[in-house]
Image (cartoon, rainbow, N blue to C red):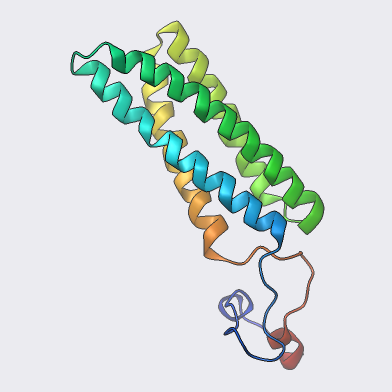
Length: 154
């Protein structure tokens, strides 16, 4: 019997029959999620610049919102590719939830609904941080692919 901790533990590299490695689709998703993280963390900074009295910060915040939106859609596309190629559905579901939250937040910001815009911004940053950890924590290999450790225990 394989325990959950053992099943998800990556095997040491260089060993014959080592655990599967992250596929190129997984690396593409990691790259897009990392870029998305970089641009989304600028948003509170630009909002803070604006709120401190520098009105150029609002222009930066609006431009950053466009970049975050584009990165979110790219992340959704990459997650769908991971779903199709590697049979991993959780990145696509998480990316869809993030894109939906970011879209609502985008339009709430345009309408000036700060009561929704600010908490939803915190929620999307936290959700993206969790997804970032999720895609970098474990190798993204094809679902159903057996590991050598699992075969030894069977």
